[in-house]
Image 1 (cartoon, rainbow, N blue to C red):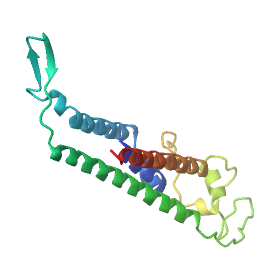
Image 2: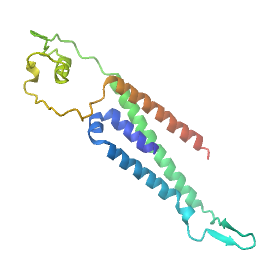
Image 3: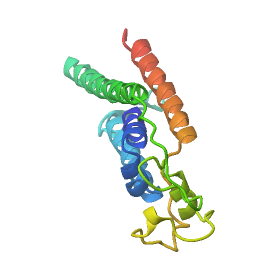
Length: 191
């Protein structure tokens, strides 16, 4: 489960366009069902094993007969757990490096924008006027930079891309999950 959470955090931050288009409610539900099915499949075989329960007539009760302990069972479980936790840590480290690299981006050199009617087009335009016009806040004629862009009237059902506040929230959530998995690994390590 922690590994799937780390992958979704990485996709939400590093590949947010893919995340907003492909990870729908049904996709997330399918991943959750798959993870729980895998967890149940790993946990229930010892409980449902044939011949592990026996009825003792003298005591008038059922008992659970422990099968002989095999070192390979524990070793396989611990290796699988260590592999999953290592993969989770690697995904979070990749996410931390991605966020760190994006934070150190050099600012773009400022070039003044051109405007005759408050549309702000040209080499220095930041695109905010175009974004405002596309969002329905524009009044007047179509800005020159948007003449070739086709408008889509039914965009109400679409999710928008991450804005700065959502990006910061995703970073905080990712940091929290990284700390959780690190503590999980640290506390279960001596076992």
